[in-house]
Image 1 (tube, one colour):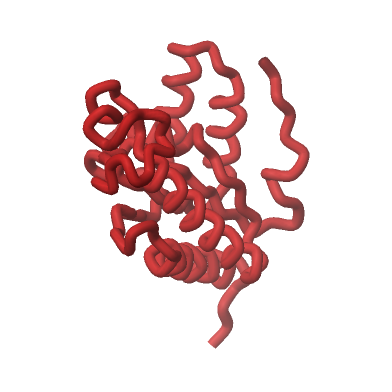
Image 2 (image 1 turned 135 degrees about the vertical axis):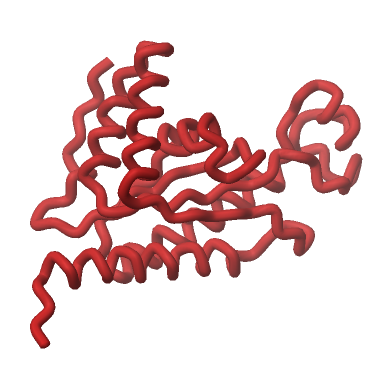
Length: 179
């Protein structure tokens, strides 16, 4: 049996994406509470994500969304990792959100810092695994914002997208910021 490099590379990207989801799940969590979810986008779902990124760029005038959408189009898959934004309930013991406890945080529309930290650790774990597997990748809040807009991780609004590519030159390397 002969497997052409394109098929092998596509399979490697999907295997890496699956392993990245597992790495995100097993990353340490504050208070031992898991509020994370992840998904892998390919094909039409990935195209819908980049289309939403372009739509957001048109609304907000942020051209870097278009640059990032081009990168998503150049990728074989996108891993989404998201966290809940509701407080953990540790109340005044924490207050790292800047409010006087969880109730005050909710009242003022604040975000629980524990979820953001957990998300950052999970994303770091996932991208370090991708790097170990020699996958070109880039963490994008723009892809996460579009994913949240499309409801791709349900009610989760704290999301990052990580496009994956296998190519002779990383499409994520010398990107230009045109604003």
